[in-house]
Image 1 (cartoon, one colour):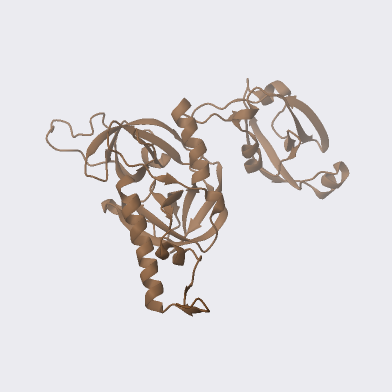
Image 2: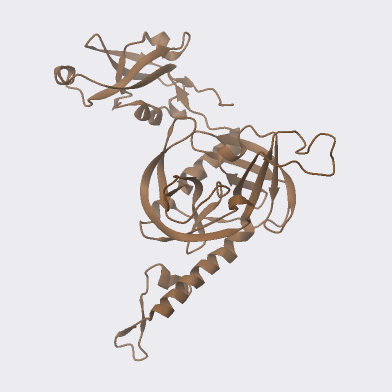
Length: 349
């Protein structure tokens, strides 16, 4: 590792004196130069892998009766090449329901892209281009980053290609509500500036390793931006490449969070003080077959306490499809237990 990178990652904050006796502190100029070299090194290494994505709803991406002019895109965003054979990671909200996707590579080539699959529940998607001489990014480990660590965001905000911004990891383990309604866990918060068009671009460490997929900003706040952890992205991308979607399970209800009366909690010695109030039950779904009905309050599933909808969503993974599990609910202040077999959740269109 270069001296510049070591200085920015905290591995060395001072230089050793010639005789090795005691370290001499670095000047502010030297520290700033080291920081600058680290950011420049990341930009030079990763920018060739960052792409601009344009989404068109017409099949050809052109205006009717005008084959010489490209239509204005209905959506734009960023992405990055993560395999040598053309797979590109981006956000679901950038390409969801797209009929035509066009990618501009770092070397300026504009190519049509195939939508391999997207997952609105994690706001991740994979597209693919038929191209050679692609430079994939190096994927890091998002479990190893720490608050305060230097990170660099690269993307195409407002169409300004390969824009570089730098900041730090502000916090880890955040939760972010996806547009589908599900909660995305283990989200990275950063103050590296993001703007519309950055969506889908990489969040990178000083080593040049991608640790997140930039996905959201909070307006009108400044410096509060979010990225989906790359460990989540790695798992989702593998499923999208294999199946075109991420399989999840469902028990076939509509519900909302609700508090439980203290007397009910104490009487039944419940681990939770809230649960999921069942508002509707699909006529032929798993819950209907198990005997649930509107007004029941789910408090436990598969021997795990359920405090609300988000808890239930986390438990309904693809591994639960077709597997019998106990479900505990409160009906008319009485606790009941049934066996339920979750079904595969239908794909979102």
